[in-house]
Amino acid sequence: GAGHCSVALCPLLTTVGFRVTVVDNRPELATRERFPAADAVLCCDLAHINDAVTIGDDDYVVIMTNGHEHDFQAEVQVLRHTTAYVGVIGSRKKTAFVNQRLREAGIGEETIASLHTPIGTAIKAVTPEEIAVSIAGEMICVRATRREDAGIKLHGCPMH
Image (cartoon, rainbow, N blue to C red):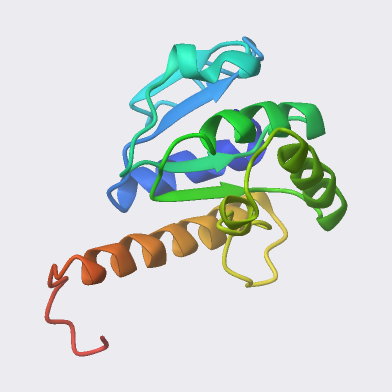
């Protein structure tokens, strides 16, 4: 999604080494002007994300659409791929609704349980910028854990 939280998240993710592709169905929001730090900004029907982007094993996906139905459309497509991370913004009510639809679409419980929802590290974030920090923090942690699990030494920082 290309909403206000994405506007805050995109430049933060690029500063910590993620390459960002923004996808939204609203042409007035999915613009280069709103996302100058993004590698790509795409406007497409969210029911056909697979036609617009390729999703792979090492990809991190953040789903922040403008509604329950769009979340479902995005999630059901993304969850049919193996990814490094899938996080979804939303309330418990929205999450329960979408998760039930995912079950009905044949998405397994283990896959649904792997979702990071509500997205982000619990830091009591309120503003779009704070929410962006919480999401980026969670993604950094997942990335570091994946690297450690692969035997990649991160750095010699004495804090770790």
